[in-house]
Length: 379
Image (cartoon, rainbow, N blue to C red):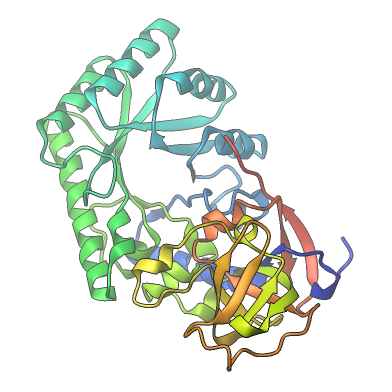
């Protein structure tokens, strides 16, 4: 496409600063090299082959996905080594088999004897092989087997005895998103490592090789002091970062590569409001910073060049209307933004904001839109 200015974009529009993204990628890759672990990037944040190719070690992977729709999409673009990192349901196994029959090494995960038996039964009935990882609950955040639970080895032995490949164990330190300090993140990283490495050792002790030991969260990956016993890391949101990550001191606001371009369409001067054409359909309803020390509303307001306007946030969001105001609620300090003025809003959660759009408007180093990278959504 021909280059165009931001002023030529119809709003709301999703803006991706390519230079910031590249620096974020380089930071994560450098950190993981220093920890001597393999990288299996997660595509759930970006859902775009143009971005994902910049993350993977090879055009064929490895890669992590959160939906089978993602697995289909990336397989269509030549990716062969894919981990589907959500516990498998029986109504998805036909889809898994179809992908594997196309030559995709698609690994699935589970965390219960019921699910393991389901996979064993389907493997026997279909005469198909499966690669399976067992999910470990390292912090009580969501799903997974407790590292010291008898069920862990029972699951492994059931699969192993039936000839189903137990590829390894994995965990996600989701509680790292609730930390108040970077020291707490480091503690979560070590807790994550101990849980999953210990689980692998228990499986090996009963004769299951368990070659892959996988961890994954952007905060713990960037603050882990060592990952002894871990073989790979899965992370996704680091590629763009967002205000939740900035609130955790995982990144600086200036490093957030994703923003939503909106246009001023009116004012409510008596309330100190500036109205823009980007509401929750443009930003999502995610309010992830509300539980952090600094509540960023629906997003931080920046000028068209991406520089934050001091203490101005998107305080409210209707479906198509966003309300800009000073964080304090004071109308006296509202900058006068004329109708037609463009602003950029930094998102609370990059995944949910990006999900509202069909493509990224790629912002080049000269602050012109240089490309439109297609992304997808759905299941």
